[in-house]
Length: 131
Image (cartoon, rainbow, N blue to C red; front, side, top):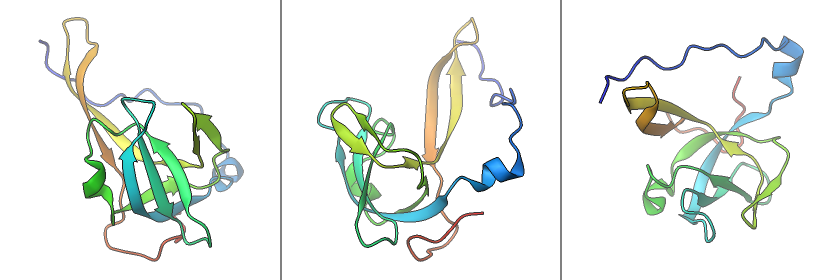
């Protein structure tokens, strides 16, 4: 097995500052998490995002996180991502996470990776904006 290389530095196209400002990045607290009933790699997560109602998201972090240990943790979310149905469950946003390749095969293709959710350095009120 070949040694892993540094994280991909392949840049995406530039966006204008006005385009960036359209993103609503917020801190949310995980209030419930469980395996997605129809997808092996997803968790169904309920969030307190500071609004009067809770928000549900589906996140592809099941291989790296025990749902019970996520409850109470704060995460950074994209709050204004258009909702969509993923394998029969509504997802109303996205939890931000970093992905790192730990091992690659002889062709340089990832064979093992880790995923780490982005969290604030210290607790903040749910719904706090990220800028």
